[in-house]
Image 1 (tube, rainbow, N blue to C red):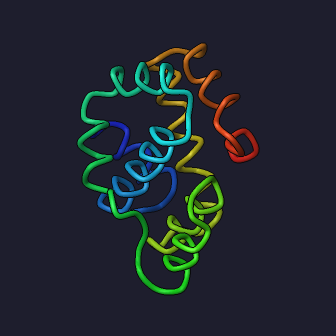
Image 2 (image 1 turned 135 degrees about the vertical axis):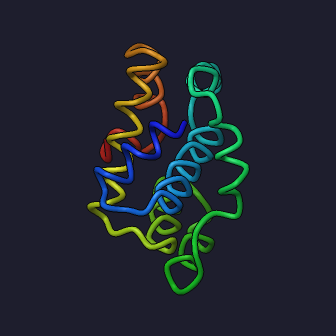
Length: 127
């Protein structure tokens, strides 16, 4: 998992703590909204992923964007608002998502990640 966090931090220009939080938030979103069988396969292929999800529970940061995420209730828009509330801009969110999906393909396989992207509402437009 440290390899992923380092990779995401470098690609998105984030410190590793924020990169870890963002990855955990996205993985948590996939765990709730994605196709369960494939998400479990992905999580099994990414040792430490469930710990990262647990550490990021509670979602975004404070401020207006964090509140917006809560008001939106969930889904991809709520995730985006929570990530912005944590301090990421749209470009960084896109980079984190793309790096996470690439890492998932490398470790869980193209078929698993393709099913996750195809069957998670709204995800395909962001990765």
